[in-house]
Amino acid sequence: MILVGVLFSCKKDTPKNKKSNHSNNEYYDDNLIYDDNNFKDKTKTLTLENGKEIITNKKTHKIGDIYYTATILPIEYYIRKNLKLQNSDSIKYYKNKLKGEKVVQFEFQQKDRKDLLSRDFTSTDYETAVKYMAFTIKNDFYAITAKGDTIKSKGVLFERNFKLAPFKRILVYFKDDEEINELQLIYNDNLFENGILKFNLKTQ
Amino acid sequence: MKITKANLWNIVNSILIICLFSYILVTTLSQKEDSKSKIVYVDNIKLFTDFNMTKDLNKQNEKKYAGKIKVFDSLVNNIKILEQSLQKLKTIPNSKKMEYAKLQKVVVEKDRELAEIREFVKNDVNKKVWKRLNNYINTYGKKRNIDIILGAQGQGNIMYGKDYADITKDFIKFANSKYEGN
Image 1 (cartoon, one colour):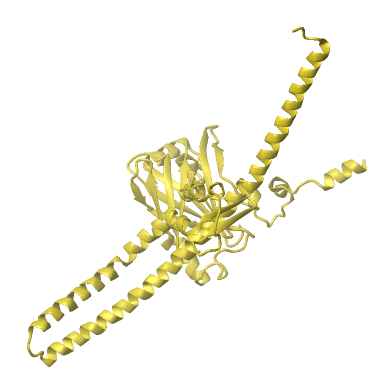
Image 2 (image 1 turned 180 degrees about the vertical axis):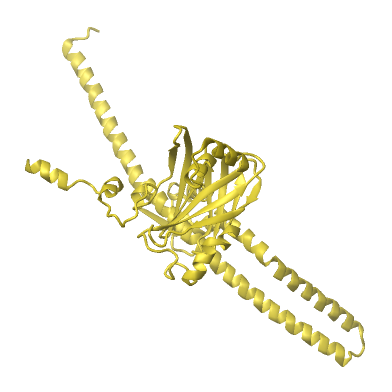
């Protein structure tokens, strides 16, 4: 009995355990990087409500204390999750409308889950950093398609979470004449001044 | 010759002893080789120049400052033309002297400005590239279970190293693959 008790008390506090332990005001996300042990590239299978499975890969770079993560959001997933549409006609309409469009989810996270937009990490004040994330960052993204064509970002959407989540998330939009299932995302980091970052992304 | 039972056992024993010694020899040698490979070195200069990020950042900066360099080059060209035309004159009028002095002042100013930019760019590229390389060196060392990675800078801190300890080529391949998003 004592041995069983000792074994239970020694149970490792993995991210999965953290999920059940987290308090109500603590943000939990399956994609969150807790430490260097769960910082790795992942292949994710996204299951939609209709049972359809979409495979996409998540690529992470760690530069200094900052994790940069990029994932292609499959367009049907984006329509259902981000545009909150479930009706099949609306989905069909938007799928047609967004043909050739690619949405990349891009996240910044500090190793100790600190607010990355504070002066400790950037050379600007908080407001300018927010403006950069919301507007100027668009010019620092471009992508190279499997064919070797360079496409510039069409726009970005900064998902403000008002410090509730320990990461900063933006959606980066690209448009090409053809359907893009594979691309190399290039980000020239002008906020944390870490230079050029490249991510080879795929979706099926 | 008739093989007796005792002889047969002797042969078997000899074979077994030879096998045992061979095994001990091979294990010891491989361990020795393994322990040797725990301390390795990289040629820092080669690493820096062959790293794709250095090339990309240099290209990016060349593009960024191409306009300023063009302006400076045309100013230098103008001053040369003016010098040549003044050399042909027997007496140089004051207005031409003034024009030359003014142009010379601008050229000196622009030259200083460009030197400052070059210094800034050099430091900026160095900082960014080494920050990235240090990250990759950590990952590489952990993955390959290396004890120490030394940096040879061509300044005498590593005077000699056997070829097997030089991981420059392999590490450049690793770092470029990581940088390219793999």
